Image (cartoon, rainbow, N blue to C red; front, top):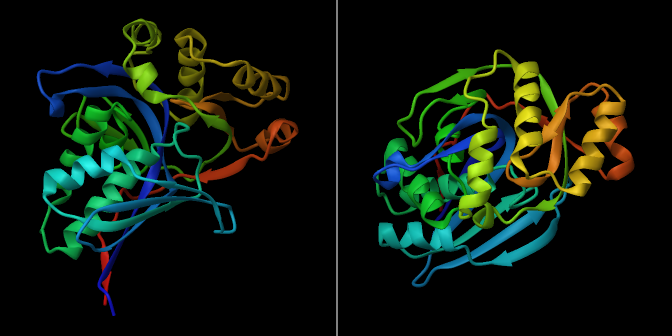
Length: 286
């Protein structure tokens, strides 16, 4: 039986952020706050003489809804390691929609590759390479740092070595996504980032309710709210449900109480539980 390694990383929902440009990749990233959620990305890797990458977006029941081929961030990271492999990543969350799926895919895949090829990469080495690839491809700035652990997260400095405050909570969120925003077009735009940086609330939230309040204020001043996001936020407002915009994605997240009823007329909301853990080591079969 062919050798296969499997690894998993939870995802990260970002509420607000500010880009920090450092002298090198590892000191470049962002400050901000978000939530590590139990849903995430599973990576399955097997040996291959050439690299092939398949991305599956799954239904809530686990059926393949969408399939994509190739991933520049993953291909970059694998070249940096000097390995080739067949990679399949699977995720129930919307891809490219503000849930840190790119970072989760990198962390899960690199963990699985380390096991498959006995690379003996430490968690820090995996995180450093994943963060480098995210920054180089402008697919994320702070998700990798957040996903080194679980909980409700405030990142006080850029990169994987920046100070992070984590709080654990059994509170749950509800999210509704309309699809992706082009993250590189935002992170690579000086004008967009200037407005985002000005909107940034430069403090850590006291609790989840404060996180939602700070995130909403940030969203309102960021210039990123789209008409569909505005409609969803207004539905939550009318029902007294604290809510904000996913960063960076065209969607909203809200407190569980009353959120399903408020958002259901606009789509199918889904439940998010806070994960107590970050990305997991790989398991190998065969």
